[in-house]
Image (tube, rainbow, N blue to C red):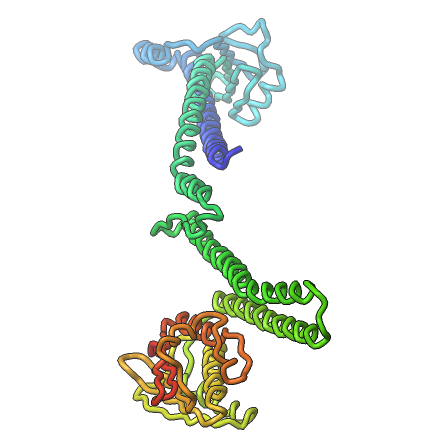
Length: 448
């Protein structure tokens, strides 16, 4: 059963149950009211009978006629009897023996008695007169009440059925209207596939559960899209970077096997294969580092951090572990606080300092912290050969490295990851380099 139908059914059941309870309460209240009213009418009949038969000799004929006209209407199946102190019927014969001696004595004892005998209602009163003590008993069938209750029951059944149908239809309409955003959400979800992972469901300005679900789904899609992008990037980078060393290894092996060669040639071929294998190992290590860094960027949380404290800590670490000097200069007016991730920012700075020491043959590296137009600027300068202008954009691409030119090893991933991290902090990283000015990396991050 669909949610819409379940909501309509539950709402209808609850509403009709409450309606049924209300109708039952009205019915039984009305029944008790009519029953009490009929008992009152019977009581009046007993009083009229007592006055007509026991005090007729004490009132005028006009008064007697007034009483008779007032209570002229006879009740359905009415039976009235008057019993004297001997419990004998007087004034009105009682050959049918409607009431037993025990009933008459109970009326005499209680002074007033009301009870129901089957479909008949009975009222008895104890009446004391100058002629003696009497008991007046009257009973009748309340056919009018029975007819009224029967009509009322029929009306209630019809009303109950009609209202139940109306409530069912209205509840289905309300449920369909309430679930319309959910239906739209489901239709939008069906449009998402592996070819359009960037698609997002529409979010409204309401704060209901469906909108919260849409926001949660879009957040999940962001995570999935990033995961798919990482996967595609990893596969593309692996295919591109591993193709060259694998091809070289295959060509070298095929040439070595094409004919018999001397030992020195085989050794050279094996050495070439080993070098290509080492290069593949570095590429794979770089790819794994890239994937790991991308995951850290996705899951990273930003918080206020003090740049000066981080730089002082990095300066102490390089001096303690590598015995390398960083000249730290600070020229800022405000507190140097930015919004970022301390661990990731330290990775960026360590990569840049590592390159600076590598290409300057471990000479002193200068680091200057300044404030420029609402941004904190970190300028890291080395005494190395500098980076040619045409290659400055290439250094931020994955797997690009100039380490081999100076006899060093490198995977070409440090600056690529540094740029991605600084972009996460809404900052930028630039290079100012020439033959005279050596190399200067400028990192700009918005001041918090």
